[in-house]
Image 1 (cartoon, protein in one colour):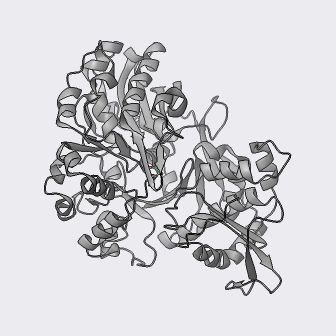
Image 2 (cartoon, helix red, strand yellow; image 1 turned 180 degrees about the horizontal axis):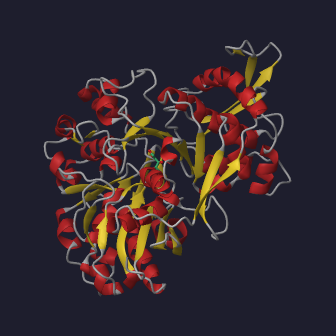
Image 3 (cartoon, rainbow, N blue to C red; image 1 turned 90 degrees about the horizontal axis):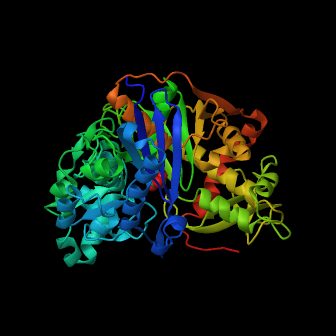
Length: 562
Ligand code: XUL
């Protein structure tokens, strides 16, 4: 391989666009981030999006500006001319609505003018629905009726109807305005939208990210014609009939970027969702780890990704528990006959931050150090449990509000399966908030994993911004009862620092040009926590009570805030 060759991986997440440039040994030459709120105050986003009740959107032109800016940063670092392939990741489920003018414009952009100025009229919808949106309850119900029920929709698409999934988002756009809908020429996911801007042509959606739409027939490996047609007879064409895999090329860099930044018309390899990109990234770095470990990503949302070697909902697959179809099954991004079980929790880092800011008591500065000091105690369970659903939760579906329970002698009005009594409290009597949120978040993962997979968990690899928190890592080890690993690069300042959706994408770009290329062992997978089996014993004993209490706060829309 050309020793000069470099590879760019991007990740357009909720709050930022990240770019990582690697060489062919996997070393990082540049890591740069554009934080939407601070870089583009004119779009007035909070944490990268606009929240209006249950509606969550992001300005598509802000994303366009960010794409231009990140490539200019690679250029400013004098690396752009050496890039041979680009791939990327993006938040799952969000949708971008192209106008006919947009399709015509992206291939013939003028390198003298800015991207967003030329693409101002390129979108029929300027505020793209994003994964945090939960305003499509009604559309979800219709989709399930069309599919023949929620279990049947899960069998087809890997998931029951979820508010944030793209199918329901598209239905809402159509329901809201026939005028807007008439101007929609094509629809991209956020991942294929970024690939489209870079390649100057409408990039196909990849199968793994298509699994987050409720419209993709995972076993048939094509869009469900019946579901797409039920929404609109033109929808199949709007989505682009063909889907691709995340290791396939979807185009070459558009002349706009090549001319403006002195780049070669290098390959653009398919973009995919952030979770599948991270998952595939770990697999390619750590041969065989996929068969052993689940990947737990601790970020704006927390996700747990576990390997599946067969599609669980096929008639010859595992019996589907119709009561527990809350999680998701995704097509593996690069291996056609493999799948991923995904559990997604919306109230991840933002909820942890809320507890840090609100639950440490007076005379504290609200720092992570103080949060960790308060959290680094032994198990709080069974003495108390805390559920912090600041925005409508995905898992358990529809849960909202802050709910705290404390054990009482025998006077509490809630009697759990173990016979222990609990009462709801407005606030804990001590500063238990930090410990309670970490425990309850990870106990939820343990509970939901047991409903999704028959395989015992053997190890967890943690990634994402919050995965550097040692107390959280230890809670993961103790509640799940498995060793916890984090990945990094030698000399990069420690494990747990690898931004995997973007890094995984850079590796896919590298591997596209040199299939089977083995990264030369500079990666480290280090055990960062070891389970304490006494603590594990406590959590195992209280799991049924935890499940019972979580049931109490699901679909009960009471906000017990501070
Ligand atoms: C996954 C999900 C989130 C987003 C975050 O289903 O909705 O994890 O992908 O970017």
